[in-house]
Length: 343
Ligand SMILES: CC(C)(COP(=O)(O)OP(=O)(O)OC[C@H]1O[C@@H](n2cnc3c(N)ncnc32)[C@H](O)[C@@H]1OP(=O)(O)O)[C@@H](O)C(=O)NCCC(=O)NCCS
Image 1 (tube, rainbow, N blue to C red):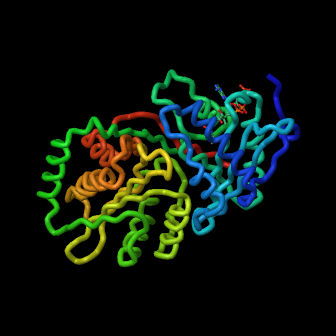
Image 2 (cartoon, rainbow, N blue to C red; image 1 turned 180 degrees about the horizontal axis):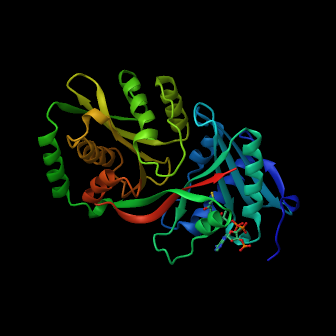
């Protein structure tokens, strides 16, 4: 295979208003998912386009397409946190399956390094990088990241719940056990954006996700969330067509003290991802985690009866969350890692 230097590739910025360039990004994403994660839903066009046109407010996002003789062979994205984590940058690199092992990945990484350094960032993080569960299976992303000198700072397992395999009697039992230990708390549920009266509490808990979930060796600072950022984040998610289902626990004092979310795409309604689950520290130990997760599973199924598969991702060191997920029936499906590279 011929080694390609960045000079031999033409690198064009993806302007969010350039429908053709965004479409080419989307098609590249589809080809990568087909090759590397065939059990996953195809990327959703509304979401992929939305992430360029309606980015979340906490970060600046720039993407580039790499072309060789006019055809798209790869792409990269740089995400710069703007409200916190000002020393960090997040990078994503995609190389079309038929153009791999030609040095394109390395060339795109050099580009991201230069761009991140120019913005004063001293660390580049590859977030939610996918790996196979079987350590003997091909792992292009892991081999690439290690060859480039990055460190797997946070190692996670993606677990999958096959909804049809859940025994309803198990959910009834888990719910009853949790209710017995959570006297003084009630549940609230919604679909879409957070009702105004809960915004401050939800913003507080969302910010705590960045400090309370284990980070292991990942150097990631506390994220600063308030009601305005929360609302802007949700506006962006809704513009991306996301279907967000939330259950929260409210203490008798009227404070919202725990929440969990299941989020689906506008397409592939059979699939959803588990997003944030958190209980405020002073309210832990009352089975609220189990209570809200079981209730939200039922809530999500009532909203989208086509739902068959839910994926959740946890740090391997997050023992408490993993126990709850395993008891509910989630089983290991893929590995994930946050790769960290000092610049
Ligand atoms: C990971 C990925 C970006 C690599 O792109 P690439 O263009 O094939 O990478 P390069 O050709 O620049 O490889 C650089 C080095 O990484 C290692 N490497 C890359 N792919 C590998 C593989 N499949 N097996 C073993 N080593 C591999 C090698 O050491 C390689 O150097 P060499 O070819 O001289 O031995 C590509 O496989 C991909 O797009 N995967 C899906 C998206 C993804 O997971 N991205 C992760 C980064 S955010």
